Length: 431
Image (tube, rainbow, N blue to C red; front, side):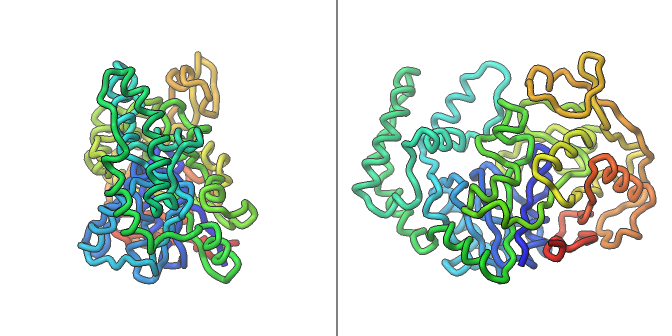
């Protein structure tokens, strides 16, 4: 038995979906433990494209069970839509392979209204929210007025809880001169969706405990990336949940001593969506080329991602924050053809050298990257599945990254295809 966590080490979009899908072949249970449908994964399997934003990536596997844990906030309307879309792509989804925690909290239409109004009223320095209501939903959870999945199945009780949420938010809507909303308008539709998903709903902590007590493999799938973490990220340009490995236990009901291995998904360069500090951002021809070749557009929003060079300072910090045991390096093929490649090895802050990302958002915006320049490679690495068949310059790049971040690279992705992966070590056999 092994319990393995997968998290992103940058600002999300590291290619977690493919790696989770690839590793899920060895997993009996794949779990989402935080975030909402603001996290997009694109999977390419036998030339067929699957786009997921709420369901765990393991749902594509025929013999894998997936769980949406209590730490996830769920838009029930989107959940139903995503299930139906996958079924239309011939993916079998039933209560046998999809479990939804009865303790997960709901994203309601009023949350999306609040989310979009707040962002649109900001004149400058927008957070970059997807507008899907994730933040306001987490706020209601902390404010102890939220609605849970288990509340969907009693219409009378559901209305009482909806009134509490809507009364709270309507005060702000009215004060801002916006149209107030009425829970009665969505009550019947919400209840109907509850009937649609009721067969999937279980107490997730009991299920996790059951799997953990047997000789089965559990794969915990994180959303977003380390530096979008509400505590450890580039605050306030962050998501509304904890994205580091520790959240896997909180978001599912599993104790910390039950985790055997943590994998950090790391892109061979760096990207970011929306506003916020980005020390290695490159807005020149190189940055544009990275974005074009990497097809850097958000799965959920379609927004173009900002692109830049690999930041070893950030990734080393992410390794420490989550006690990462091994790195899965993705999108190495995007660097094909660059004459030279830059790696950030430190920062200057007010002419002083530092080797960490400061907590202050003012200082984060002021840091300047210190680059080491290495030789690029001419050959294509697309589809390479053996480390020895990589160009010598690509192998040097990988080894240099390992040394700078003080963590071994155990997987290397060389294309979006599931099988185009260099498999150096099996995390399910390393505990």
